[in-house]
Amino acid sequence: MLIDDKIVEDSIDIDQDTLFRNLDHFEIERCFVLEYLEMLLRWNKQTHAISEEKLQKLWMKLIRKYKFSLDEWERNAGNRNIHSYLVKEQGHGLQRLIRFYRERHGVKWLENAFDYGMTLLLKFGEMPALEMFFLTNLICYKWQLDYLEDEEVQHYFSHLANGKVKEVYNSFRAYDREQNLLTATKLYKLISKYNPQFHTNSAATPEFYKELALFIERK
Image 1 (cartoon, one colour):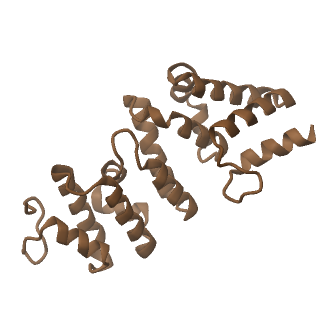
Image 2 (image 1 turned 180 degrees about the vertical axis):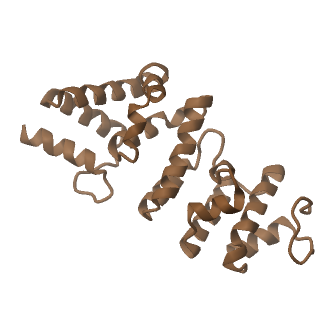
Image 3 (image 1 turned 90 degrees about the vertical axis):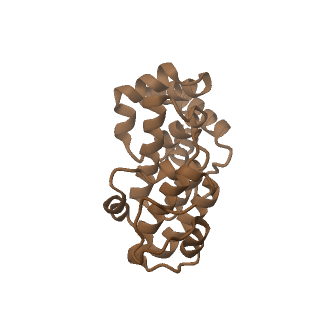
């Protein structure tokens, strides 16, 4: 299948596999990479020839190489969020990309990916399997504290989320109000239960989790 809705500069049709390979092998000048990437992503929305996982790997590879900013993508692609091309319907791959952005200190990309997922969750009920992931991130990483003060977010986690997620949310609210040993211990145990990868001596563990453990230890 050939591209029919985007004019390639030299007017020569190019097949999808070749375009992917050229991007993957860094054979396109940086100034044209996002234009061709967006072309490939829109094309793949029609053909589904390339898996989201493969596209995610390509995107992370390009970010490492070229250090693209969110502003650069938005100037090229307008209002279309790049994560709508990279993430499956139920959110598969979103956690991976968020971890990647966090590790590389890509704050704008991190916020953009998180906003994309939260919007789909709140507005359309998509990605319910990621409810605990979203809530844990809101509590522990404090990217945007305003999220937890938003009435729509509060309503969702206190009324619409599944039982386990509600329990964590209510426990967080109790700790936020009371700041005592009982509420801190309960919240710490719940976060530990659903995030076994957290360890107080690990640099990758969020500071809030470490602060909570220290708060309990001092009481």
